[in-house]
Amino acid sequence: MSHILQLSLYTPECINSDLEAVAPVIRYWDLGNPQVLPAELARDVTVVATKGDLGVPPALMASLPNLKLISVYGVGYDAIDLNEARRRSIAITTTPDSLTSAVADMAIALILAGSRRLVEGDHFVRAGNWANGKLGTGFDIRGKTVGIFGYGRIGKKIVRILEAFDCNILYCDLKPDADHPAGFCATLEELAEKSRVLVISAAGGAATRGMVNLNVLSRLGPDGLLINVARGSIVNQEDLIKALQNGAVGGACLDVFEQEPNVPEPLVSAKNVILTPHISSATLEARRHMGEVVIQNIAAWLEGKPLVTPLQL
Image (cartoon, rainbow, N blue to C red; front, side, top):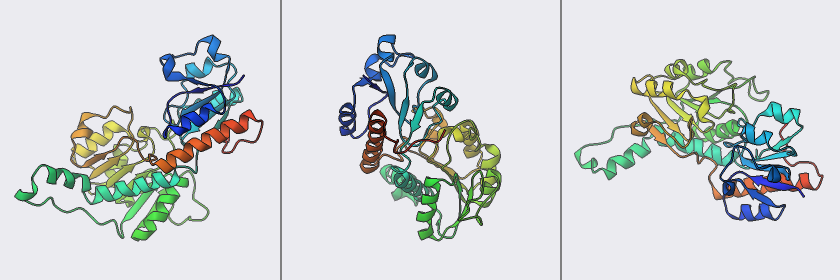
């Protein structure tokens, strides 16, 4: 009988019980998260249910001889060895439409929080500093140029929301979008140079690792604001810290980091940085829908039906 190897708990809790109703589930964390699965369990696993930031560790994938499907709770697949999946004909599914609005809304929230100094203002009041003076001013995003690095589902949704703020929108991706060619920038450097706010919504992986470096941040400039709701690996974290400390960039709002949940102290202590714990998709509605799509894909595969949201390998 096919078994599902679940790598971590899902939210809300009902998703976990619904998953168990589809097929027997092996809870990876109950085994102590071994590098490889014991052979007597590994041979029964045909499906891995995982999260985008977890993927499937290479050694674990190699220990599963009958693995046929990896169902991702999220849109990221950079932590999965795609070449190995292709070689072994392992199908991969994600939940691309489940979290688009939630992540885009989070990007807007961070833009507003950063530009209007909301978190800094909260700390200012709580510390009792208001009686001694005013916080100072932020800036209005209306009429400003916002650059979007990664013009996929989430990037386009961010743009649609920003239309209400009368922002000038530019974007950088692998090629111009046929419906919106005018705002295309061929390089990330050009995008940063022209933007007051730079939003990272690109896919993670080797192709984008460290692309937001000191050169890009310097082009964004001392009044520029960086927003990252994508992958921590896209931003060179050491360069970002240097840019923040020397004033090369004005501020940053980060929901993702290079080595989560570890956040460097210079980012934690910086007043011009807002930090959130990878919660862009953390709404009850988005997470429930993500879980439902994970289960729908697994059920479809077990029943020999077409996958609901297959990744094209």
